[in-house]
Length: 258
Image (cartoon, rainbow, N blue to C red; front, side):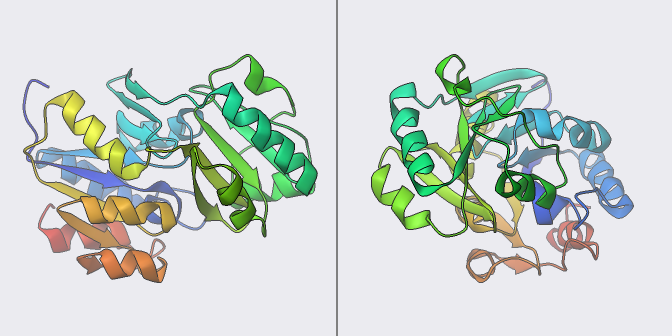
């Protein structure tokens, strides 16, 4: 980077940067513009895929992001890190899901496909207001998969016990984000800072959910949303208002960044 930022601010998307309709509130867009004008680098740090955040990044004028829970990182349109899940790891997981009556989605850098079309799959994507992916059961065999989504409401522990090479984050009532072990929003932060030569600048983070806890802990200053889970609030330096009531703007003001 030609000019070193005064700090890096990492934002979760769903229920944090986005309101309950998965939209950016006008006050949030204004706050992000003020943040950048003040010399800070905003970064989206999300479980969503690059494909799912294009419009949001354009509206927010953010071109740096850690997607898929730290498994795909990009800056200025160029990838700086990717963590592919081996096919040999995915195959038994898909078999387990089929045995349990669950579906699986496969995430690459630019596409999403699922093992089947079902009400379970539709419910998960409707929850975050994004399109339901096509059903291509063997998609993972010929594509570099960076994250899996397990569609289940009850089988969390069964998947954790049977898949030690993966890390699971329940991120909605309907689904579990699943990545290669050793990748998280926290590792995404560190890898991005190293890639950009920004390991010495202060870091800030905003989040609400299970997969945000490591990010809030790793940041120099962590902010949890009022609508966040108790674990996120417990590790945060500050709890701002919720994602429908100017939580981002108020949190940035509290930190003195805008």
